[in-house]
Image: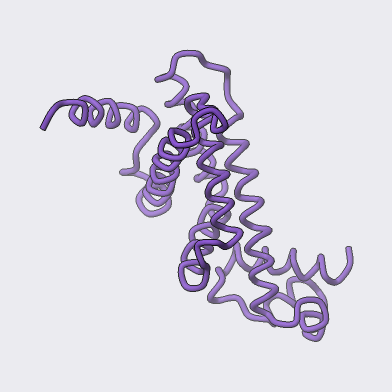
Length: 193
């Protein structure tokens, strides 16, 4: 592994252990076992290195989320499938707390700098499509608007459920709780006001 790769891995390690705001150039080079000058040579600035490390951490988060979402039995009952997927996501939060926390720090960081046309916006669209397909077999090519709104709802649920499990896991929603809540909401939203 070259110095560039060592720096990236060291930066990811520091992000997971300390977070973006608390990570210093010295922390990264100590974790990577390279000199401070290596940051300037390979990335120009510590911020550029941390941004690249955030991208790498987000990729790893995406891989972990995909494993959690697709790693269960092939259930045909929609409610059972819904509950099973959410229970796997929740288990992933408990098992990979630092990775999930880093993803939220990335969102905060992007809120201060990213424009809507950023590469992160494209990743959000991909996530919407994937979530709509996973939960309800919605084909985004055939029905892009439904994929957008259904996938967007699942993104919103995902963020909220993860926050619950990071902050107060003893009170957080389970897969069965989510299914019950959505059934109740759908019954009420479907009624005329």
